[in-house]
Amino acid sequence: MGSADLLAGRYALEHIAGHGGMAVVYEALDTVLERRVAIKYFQTHLLAEPVLVERFRREALAAAKIVHPNVVAIHDIGTGEGDRPFIVMEYVDGPSVAELLAAGPLAQERAAALAAGIAQALGAAHALGFVHRDVKPANVLVAQGDIAKLTDFGLVRADGERAPDGLAAQLTADGAFVGSVRYVAPEQAESGLWSAASDCYALGATLFEMLLGVGPQPGAHIGASDLDAELTAIVDGLLVVNPQRREADAVALGDELGQVAERLRERRLGI
Image (cartoon, rainbow, N blue to C red; front, side, top):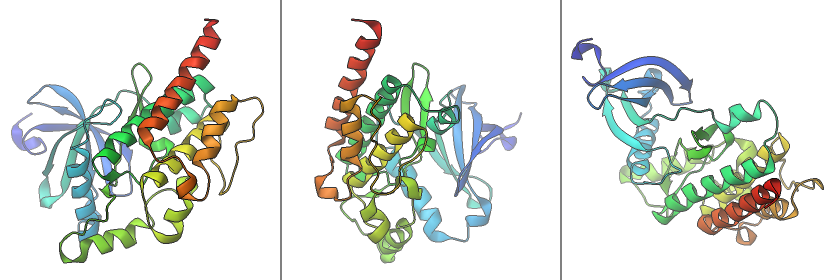
């Protein structure tokens, strides 16, 4: 295959691995470094939407700053034919949590461990002033070793940074609709405001679904007597309506979930 047949003279697109609202995801080969990568390639029909193009660009630039074992790494960005932007990402050889849930709820130990990884990924983003805005099972990949990898960052500055020409206001208005309703915090749905606390709500909704197999309704409590009491208390605490009463320290949350997962593992092994 000649360089003219490669994306940006380097990447061999092999097959479509998934579709998103703004992009098609390809499994590909980086012919320079000789490794598998995933490439998120912007949808051609959306090129006439400058706000979406800019959001895609911001996602790449922001996510590239977050270096963490539980975050899908960004390797490169560029543009293809017709100035169609793309993002080159770490290739994760494993299913999404959404795909796992197609077979039913996860074991409590596994759910707690995966949620702990998601929380640590969010903590790394929050430490840089970013929020994710769309934490949900489909955006968590499970790598070898059952390692959670958070992806698809529709990132913005949590401090409300404004971009040139009023773009931040457009992204804010558009951002009110970012995210799947089942996982969106009440304050985010009502006002378009997001924060570390709204990310933590989405993590709670995701963990709820991992444990029960269905997502929560607004104001839901897990209320399952056969589940670990500490784990259900964490979920219920994350789903409270008032964000000021919700855990917003994702790193501390990840530590707590990790301890629960370890305790459940020890109980299973009879340690």
